[in-house]
Amino acid sequence: MSNFKVEIKSKDMIKPFSETPNNLKTLQLSFLDQFAPPVLMPLIFYYQTPFSQHNNNTTTTTMLLKNSLSETLVQFYPLAGRVNGNLSIDCNDQGVEFYEADILASLAEVIANPDLKELTKLLPYAPLSINNNNIVTAVQVNHFSCGSMAIGVCMSHKIADGATVGAFIKAWARCARGDSNNDKKLVTFDSASFFPPMDLNGIYDPEIAICKEELVTRRLIFDKEKLDELKKQCDNEQLESPPTRAGVVSALLWKMFIKIARAKPMPTKFFGVSQVVNLRTIKSSPIPENYHGNLFWSTFAHTQVEPEIEYTEAVGKLRTAVKKIDTSYLEKIKTGECLVELQKAYESFSQGEADFCGVSSLIWFPLYEVNFGWGTPIWVSTTTLPFKNTVFLLPTKCGQGIEAWMNVLEHDVATLEADQEFCSLASPIIQL
Image (cartoon, rainbow, N blue to C red):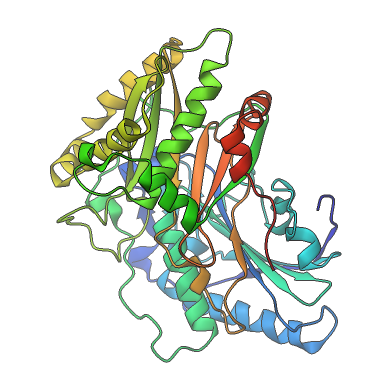
């Protein structure tokens, strides 16, 4: 459904329940934080609830969300601060912007056949919003006419990667439902101790990845049967171990992007793919899982546009690239040596020799377990992001499938939609 109307009922500023200590008032950005693009990362959680827009339940629910958010911000104190350029976060407790809105449509009308760009209406800001307040976090609680609700969360990429966003929302939900086993583990924002900041002026522009052209998002559904089919297409004798769900999907989408490149009047010679690797989860990682901020790095694989790469080879190249990110590679990130690889990639891109796509995944995070006290979400979505040729992988509700949100240039959509396999995967329907 497109053009549904949103009426903002209120706007508040939610501050941490207790003041942040003076020794934590300034959070220095790490090298990886500095490297992150200045965008707001969006997630939206959709709930079928027995509430009504016009009864006391919504008031009670909103107060519950506000109070639990305030408590959660004591641990996640930088999220209530403000971004200070590409240097630091002022942890000044100014607060999280909290909007409450009425949606003049039912949940079923909005998401049964969703217009993916329209979903930004359920967020307090679009991902590329430029706001004078330099906010870190904003929330919008949306009440549908049927009584259901959606909670939209935006968080600055300058202080958060996917793992940080997920951990914060999980902690907030547990606090809201009064879980007696509420996670009281130490939350640490000190990634700069692993990756000290650098002067990136003249070396790297964090805005380089932001696309100014018109982008279109398509949502592809890979259920368990399709994933099993893709795994069977791989020749396991050529692989060291069986392929993963993310691996087979990423390889297939890489090949789709190469088809787009091949269809152009003057195709590039090479096509690369970057994959985001969570540095907390690599083997023998020295980075604890309770460390938050940007703790990821992108690894590259590439191939010639012609001849077409075989599917198993694509899966193998992606895996080999990911395995490069080990504990020894962390030193290359720490010293900035890794920038040499990136500079070579960007040079080939600027000279027209190569093109790139990117894959980022949240399929490992239990998004469908985020329960604020009225059950688990029926759907979790993102929205169109301002990055050309990128794919954001989300889990499906059953936990065995993958939703791939694919961002492409508007004039490249025709090439995709002429592809039979792409059309079989592009499913706009949400089953309620």
